[in-house]
Amino acid sequence: MRDFLPADVRRREYVIGVIKEVYERYGFEPLETPAVENIETLMGKYGEEGNQLIFKILKRGEHEKTGQADLALRYDLTVPLARVVAQYQNELPKFFKRYQIQPVWRADRPARGRFREFYQCDVDILGSRSMLVEAEICAAASDVLTKLGFDDFRIKINHRQVLTGILETAGLPLDKYADFLVALDKIDKIGQAGVTREFEDRGVFLTPGGQKAGRFLLDLQLILVEKATDVDAQVRGDFNADDRDELNARMLGGIEEFVAGHEGAHKGLADLRRILELTEGTPAKGKVEIDPTLARGLSYYTGAIMEIEVTDLPGSLGGGGRYDNLVGMFSGQDVPACGFSLGLERIIVVMTEREMFPPQLIISSADVMVSVWNEQSVADSIALAQELRGVGLRVDLYPEADKLGKQFKYAAAQRIPFVALIGDDERSRGEVSLKDMRSGEQRSIKRENLAATLREALSN
Image 1 (cartoon, rainbow, N blue to C red):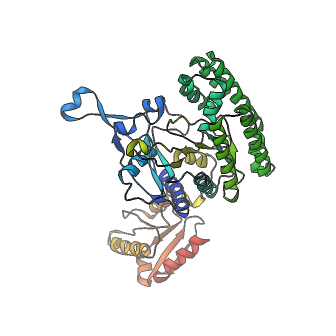
Image 2 (cartoon, helix red, strand yellow):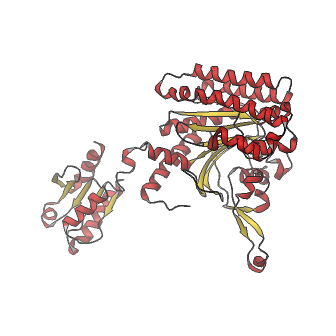
Image 3 (cartoon, rainbow, N blue to C red):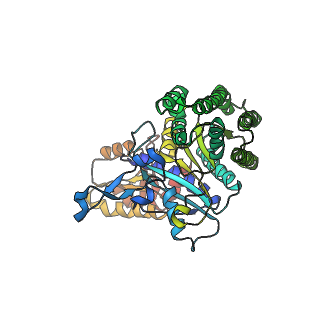
């Protein structure tokens, strides 16, 4: 958990502003939910490992001594959304499209770009089973990242029914499914060798089915790894959408051959092909990549699952998928749903390292600083600051009648580009001295022309 200094806050507000603008262009509406949920709302929704990462809140007052928890900090924004839809179903539209940008908490071991308190930026569509929903979500996420300046990302997709079909075809015992998927979900963090060790430690490879399924998926992943350099070459312009189409066809063909005759897997493959088809006319065109090893550890996913990868960044910038049964856990009614979450913190880390933020974002907190000549001129300095603020300029007012040299030094340290001062001579002439801190030039300007002069200078 961290403190955010002014420059950090500006970066965050910039990214959140872009995300909101894009999501609203796609018709998503804002939603907010409390930081705290009843513990039974959260438990059992995220799988065994997820349950262990929930921050629990112990009972208070006369129940404090029991050491029991009845509340918890929210782990994500999806389960609270499912509760809201169940609770307010008669007040929401048939197709509910919402975005939500709020902090979540996980009792995790921090790593690069990962924190115990972090923001999620979610979009979800509820009420439809059409793969157009997945395509819209992929398009919106692509639009956000493109507008932020990313051009080396890819959206990896897979399908829970495809994974289940592979495990069933291989003959993996049902009681080993969770162990298999939890281990497979770590492949982007610990690599093939690490996943193989996890398969062995969890007893997956002690079963013939586990070895067959594991080796099949890891072999497919090797193809993706071999193509990774080519995929990243898309940034240079020598890896195009046709190359990714060829890679996707190879993945789908390999899976189809392995699961021949498995009805659920073929349904999942049909969904994946439909998503690829529907994203052709969107900003996600050429960015979607079939990855048979993508598992997504959360247990509530039922269909297509997605993650966004960026070159040279371990882990993902976001992920999501279809969770058609989650709302029904709260309402008892069948409500199809699909969503995606962008990781704000990881996006900011990468953008900062790559210097992707607009230069003006971190130059200064103000357009101009109004100095204070002496104690007798304080009221006049206040009045000038308010005049400039009234026309939309960002104005910092120096709080003391200090030596001018110190005031200029302060403005320079704060990267404020201009300093306005009214001395006795300027006041008698109805003028203001304006110093350009970038060039050192200082000139006198009629007070009534100051705002226009500043605007023109700031635009250059």
